[in-house]
Image (tube, rainbow, N blue to C red; front, top):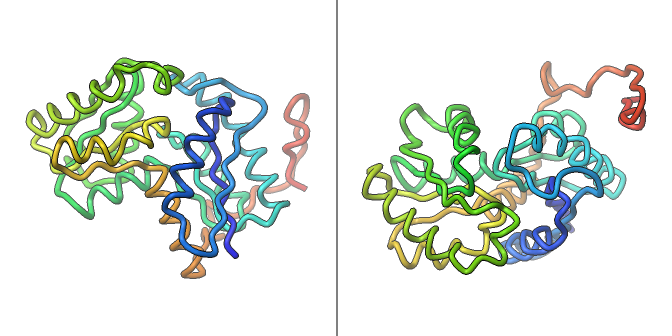
Length: 244
């Protein structure tokens, strides 16, 4: 039995439930998906400030997963917050959803466009594309300007995402659309059908990638950068995070 812990770094339980549903839909036989969120941190992640303050809660869930015997982890926020830190402390592989989605996009097309939530997050998506994809592969980032917490309730979301995706294919000359928020996971199949092109949701892509890495017996290398952090005192609110 393989246990994959999918961590939504924000504190909104309803979004965590939707993320868990998407991840379980693609998990293979013998794979258990546990979708969790921290009990501290922002309700959504839409700024560098939000992202920074989400990381302690994310790492707390990784530590709890280690105690529970998790085999691998998905960081279910498109900014991939805390990904490198999580890899330092997790026994099994850790994959971010932007990372998985962009890698998958390059396997099915020459270039991709990202459709995300707020325009203020576009710079972060471009930064990650520089890390994960060849130069020029990310042809554009397009924001629907609907906040993360309204993705579940605003009826304009799906039509807006479809329109932006169709426009991005034409304007950017892209072959593939990457959905730039874990809260958009449930739209993937319908958007793809409507625009007639591959649409990639990072939650499902990351879940399957972690599943494959676990099946191959692969885990994060402990050489150099991803070695376990050296022990040292932590004080104040972070005292419980000290590596012993």
